[in-house]
Image (tube, rainbow, N blue to C red; front, side, top):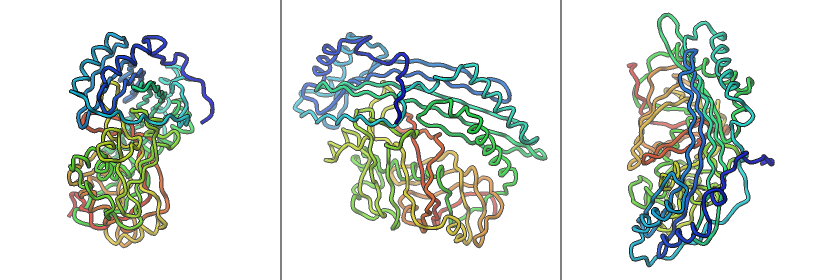
Length: 478
């Protein structure tokens, strides 16, 4: 990454709030006889703006700072947090977290290795733009969308940005830090024709400044894409129902991979044998040619991390290689308990939360098939290029996903768009039924969030065009 100046007021808790030596002594007291633990300090600033139907419906700014102190012994973790950066608060947290250690007897795990790598600029994503300019951009997007097509009846524009600054203090005295910018722009358009209304959404973002998103060259493309999807859905016919072939487009449809497969490859679910993939390392779990990785090292991507929330450098972790399960995503605690190495996937929503194994950017790598030939090979099915919400049971991988853009395909020809299509199946079976993998790997535009155990973190997904045989499509047409 090029050199970028840090925020004008950098987060330096051991300069402005705390005596480092005394904080370290309290941490060591909490972790005496423990296996692992840390003092995680954080400052976060967020802004979100929402323009809906020509009016600013929401304009919010938030600022928070605090710490979480964690002590780990075996399978037990004690965690205490406060939004007060003081030695008195750390002393109280130390006594609480210490309860998890009990009589001790643990051996402190080796610290993570430091890294000088930078995957994103250490700068406030809102620097370089004024609040008035951001409001003006939202209004310009609304006007542009309405001028594009008379069928546009409603426009919603959301701009969100945040800056998270963290420091991690380890019991051996190691200090690790990261500055994480994040920004996102989303446009939703509702179009109407003959009394029928349909919507389309598009957007993007990543770990970069918001001014890139506010560039007309970017947001005009986003508006056109949202409008295109809305107009496609105006022509949609009821989706068919039944078991059929499904072609998935590149990029954002990787959210199905993330939910149906990715969560099942997180270390805690496998250690507790609650995942459909538990105990299957070395076994074939997918069709030949299927390689799935979790890669937190992609520069500027929404799910990327220079270090995770335990201080471990992010990594490119191969999960499935040529159809064979070869690894899981690990935080420090689960890796130790499973006799494996941390993979840089220890993530937490904030200082008030405990870390756990989480995905970063989860991708299926490209194959060699021509994407057009993949769709042409569909005898009777659908081609899905956009997804909305879904539900997954990680114990068996069963999923239900709603398509936001999909098309009927017969004898290799793309026909009318379809409305109300849902994909129903289970991750392990779907992986084994992949019949073709395209050469067109693409990443999502940078809008994804992932929920687990009540915590939300930004993530990325990606995949090439795929052909899966035998998925159940839920629809309303006979």
